[in-house]
Structure formats: structure tokens, C-alpha cells
Amino acid sequence: MNIAIIGSGNIATYFATKLFEGGHTIVQIISPTLENAQALASRFHCAYSSNTNELSDQAEMCILAVKDDIIKTILLQTDFKNKFLIHTAGSVTLNDLSGASPNLGCMWCMYSINKNHLPERTNIPLIINAANNDTLEKIKTLADCISSSVYSLSDEQKLTAHLAAVFANNFANHMFTIGQDILQQEQIPFDLLIPLIENTVEKLTYTSPDKLQTGPAIRNDKGTMAKHIELLKSHDDYRNIYTLLTESIQKKHA
Amino acid sequence: MNIAIIGSGNIATYFATKLFEGGHTIVQIISPTLENAQALASRFHCAYSSNTNELSDQAEMCILAVKDDIIKTILLQTDFKNKFLIHTAGSVTLNDLSGASPNLGCMWCMYSINKNHLPERTNIPLIINAANNDTLEKIKTLADCISSSVYSLSDEQKLTAHLAAVFANNFANHMFTIGQDILQQEQIPFDLLIPLIENTVEKLTYTSPDKLQTGPAIRNDKGTMAKHIELLKSHDDYRNIYTLLTESIQKKHA
Image (cartoon, rainbow over all chains, first blue to last red; front, side, top):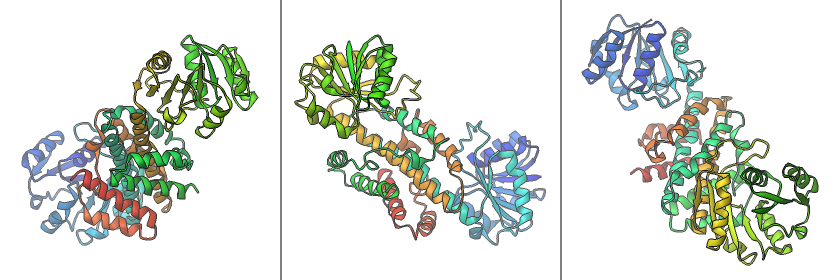
């Protein structure tokens, strides 16, 4: 397929590289900063531009891999009506972009990609969906070049997966951050917690997380919880989180 | 050193095995269930009993590796006054056990040990403390047989580390569980989230968690957050957690 990539960041680089390796033709890279467009285009010996109005007629498919907040600007200033248009954002639905092209779809990579160290693992989950079957079939062909773990989900399911990732990745990471903050008060290094965290995550590959719950909340160890609350007496925010999550664990495992 | 182990569970098995391999003599295993005491004792060719009143005179040091809630019962019915007494609980302080022995200490392993698959890694953090220097020196000798990562902390610091572990391990795991719950509503497998979680945890070894925060909260993506809140409209508990953690992330990274 002849593909134009709009964007030159992490996802643009990852998808373009995988699709090129998979035998597809990258016909053009478009990025607001011309040097970035040129640098990425040089890997695929293709055209480049800083303006989506210069979108190549050769491109059957456009992959929109830009920050969420500039998607709408690009759609307003560019005519994609005769192209297959794929966006790459987890939290954007097809409905949000309806009207941009009748052949609209999405490939969302559930991973934090770094363009300077593209991941070696081939099973990074790739969520796809599309406004019609023809577009979905085209996207499947591309997705198979990128990942061995492709999930076709509805918009509603995709948003649900995005929400789940906020809990399991963003909020879990904030729990690591709070752990770090608490340790810092006593000049204890965060490294102390890493083996424990690694061990729990290793077990996720063969045990579901609800089976792995441990700690004072699930065993209703009131003495320990009272000591913890006392330690947090001058930190209202963390104390409120402690109380709410303790209640949630006890309710879940009642 | 001549050591008696009280308990036959995960920590009892782990510590006894490591100390035996390190050249110390396990003189006795005491466990309420005689078969368990016997089974563990057979590995070290030592005496065993189901009753702490039969504690061997040969034991210079006793390691108390039982569930938190039976520690006090054992202390009431047993005279440890002439022994070095080491407890192994994260949430129990030396102060809690004061009076049991003048030579009181603690070795707390910050890890989830499974006696049927003892960990191969040698850097599992071991927190030690003691009521006096003589006891601390004895404990250090033992601790070095168990781990290459020994931290001598005060009771206050140890409780702080325990609290940090509740956030970074127990509460983070609950975030994984909520992620799983949310996915299950749409029949999406939890496996989808594992590469993302693994990737974040891999980065913890070289980046601190506050540098790894991503997601709608930190970029104040109000549109996405509104969609998430809408998805959680019939789940008050998870919506409250979403709101509280979003505020906490925004405050931390303001």
C-alpha cells in the first residue's frame, strides 16, 4: 500500500518503520518541522513536507500520528475524503473525527514507544477499528506488519481499554511515585521497592491481579492500618488515598 | 550460630535454608503443626517440636517467623529472656514486643516469598534493626547470608518503608485489579495491559517513577477525562478513585 505518514514522533517513526519493513511503500512524511519530516523521510527514500495541504496524490492511506490536540486542526485544513485515514490516538473515537473521511479507522498502540529505541518485542498490543469493513481489512493488513497481538475493538471497547490502562499504568505509576515520596521523607532509596514490584508484575503473566492482592487491607489488619494512618497524619492527600483504596480493596475482596 | 526457627511457612523456610547454606546450625524447628515442623527439620537434620515451651537450650538465637496475629500469643507462653529474639514482621515494631527479650531485633524481607519456589535473586531487600548494638551485629552476620541488599533502619524508618510498600505494591496491584475489572465488562482480556505495565516497571530500574508519569491527568486532557468519568457513571467507587488520583497526580506534577 502507498502510505503517507503525518507526524514524525514516536508513533509515526514506529509505524513507518514497521510498515516499510513489511513491504509497504511510505510515499511521504509530513511534519510541521521540515527537518524532522526530512530526517524520517530519508530512511524510506520518500517525499516530505511541512504542510498537509501538500499531501501526495499517490498516498492511498494516511496515518495521522500527531498529538491529540492538533488532530482537529489538521482535519480542518486538509482534505482526506478520497483517502483511507487512520488515526492513532487511544482516547479519540471514530465519532470524534466523523466527516474527515468515509474510510476512517484507528490503529492504537497500547505501549509507550520511544523512537530512539524502538521496541524489540513483537507482541505489543495494537487496537484497531474502522468505520467500515473495507477500511478494517486494509488496516488489518497493516497491523499484522506491526504486531502479533492485534485486537479489533469497537469504539466503546477501545475507550474502555484506554480507561483500564489509565488505572493499570498511569495510576499504578502514581502509586510508585507516592511510595518514592514516602521513602524520601526518611532518606530511604526507592530501589528498596523495585524487587517487590518486579515480582508482582512477573506473576501477572500467569496469575490474575485479584489473586495477587496482599497487604493490611485485604487481611483487615487494623493495627497496621492505624500505624500507617498515624504516619500520614500531616499528609492529607496521601491519607485520603490510603483510606479510599483500603475500602476499595476490602469491598472487592469481601 | 545455633538457631531455632519458630514457624514453618514461607519466611521460616527461606531464612532457615539461607542460614543453613551460610554455615549456621539450625538446632530446632517449632511449628504448631508437628508434621510441618518435622518436614522442615528433616532438611537440616535437627530437632523439631510443636510447642515453644520445648524451645531447645542449645538455641542462642530464635527467629520468630509466624503470622503477625500469633506473635503475641507465642511471646506470652514462651520465655525468650536468655535468647537473641528476632522477629520477621514488616508492620511490628521492637516497641510492640518490648519485654520479650532484652536482645530483640528484626529481619524483615521486603518480598513475597514462596517456600515452594525460593527466589534465585540474591538482592532481595532485607531490613534489619535491633534493640542494642550487640544484637544488631549478630543480625548483620545472619542477614549477610540471606541477601546482598541489607538495610539497617530505625523502627520509624522501617514502618515508613512498610507504608511505602503498601502504596507501591498493594495499592498498585489494586490498580491492576481495577484495570482487569473494567476490561472484563467488555470481555477484553487483561493480557492486553501486561506489556504496558512491564515496560513501565522495566524503566523503574533507571528512571524514578515521577519522571515516568503519563496519561490524561498529567497533561490535563479534560476531554479524555470527561469520557472516562462518563464510562464510570454507574461505578461510584472506581469513579471516586479516578477523581482522587487524577487530582493527586495534577497536584504532584503542578
